[in-house]
Image (tube, rainbow, N blue to C red):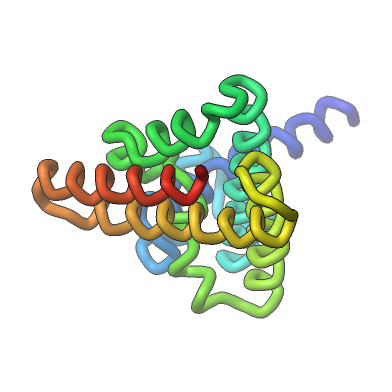
Length: 191
């Protein structure tokens, strides 16, 4: 029984990871249940048993992706101290992250699909994004929490928008120009 439970847990984890990569790389409309199941090495029946629906898979993938950011921000703050915004921005807008759609940031990759999602999905997104903004704000300069939170929203919005725009550019020089302008603006806000 314990082996069966462990195998079920592994299958669910593999399905969520495959859904996360697929939705980030191809968007909600660009991937189907069979594609996610195949990438996870599972059957479509297993997909439905574990995730219920494509919407359920998207919700699980969104949670996983935003939780990754919730873990990453304090990690950057701990590793880089007061210089964490620069290290974070360099990574976030760097060429490697721009080109890695499947493993890139869920804030950028999944937000457009969240707009067209259920209330439940948008509520989860809002709750997680508020957590992310508070974490970012805790590491920014400001005279009070409200000011730091305002800076955090601006910082995040610049990064998310710039990554989206840079990824859409056909020419790498154009993508780098977008990234460079956004780096400067984000770091100016960070202080």
